[in-house]
Length: 364
Image (cartoon, rainbow, N blue to C red; front, side, top):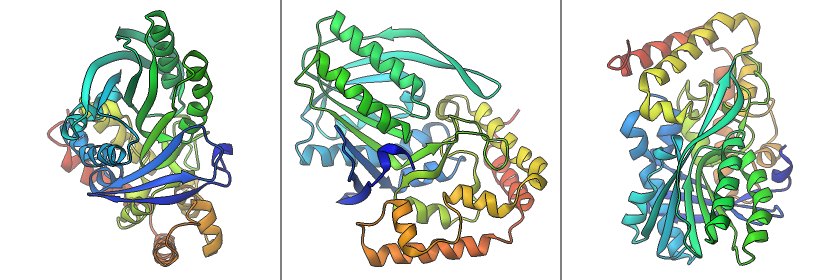
């Protein structure tokens, strides 16, 4: 288990409009961490067929609802400055959702930090473009994907340095992410740096869509996962709604990554098409190299079977409604039992056919 997640548990913060809201409790945190679940983001993260502008629209409901809830809780005010980390950050509908909730956006700033990837490994980062203003006492709002966290760490430290150089100040930060466990570790490390420069800094509110995922640390059971890039459930904290949604589909759990490449999925669709089809073709090639049981356990996040009490602890559900969690546990156990006799090649053929049909307009 990730150190920052030890002894933590999800606690329901309620349901606002179309979104379920959970707060991560039990840890010694300097910041606030939430998981939100909405029909749009569940579909986005379970189906790589959701592409282009539809991937942006899928995030509007959850983002707008959470901003409305935060305003209702007096956790944010009626003004914000938005910083967009190009290019994945452009997927997040922060400006539109602020507008819908009566939050005035004073500045829209940008920083480009591109990952340099060689042989499926991140080998460097390159900041190529910035446009940044530095007012006083702002709420800084950012949306981005967080996997290894290296891109975000470099960008945030660059922002801090620029704000100090330009005599600006940051009161609080609100961060929306399709992100992994590294986000918590990173934000806990960064908060003292904010407070060193601005003692009045109130902290970071970090909102995860559908779960706090984990990034693979190695190539996984299949030998083809991308370390520090691909997301899955193991050692993370997943919303109950997303677990049920994914397990209601025969194949969604077995996708390569929760989000794949967010930028390519929105702006370079043929590249996204290639990545998804390449994954399923590779799965067929290596199918004899691993057991389906090991693959299933890796994707569920634990060795099956487990007792109900252990399942609650593994998933950080100890404080959620017992009856509902027992129903989800049974549902998940039935999925695992039903899946043990599946053929990975048949799944791969089915997914290749479905995806090629859905994206044939973009194929070359």
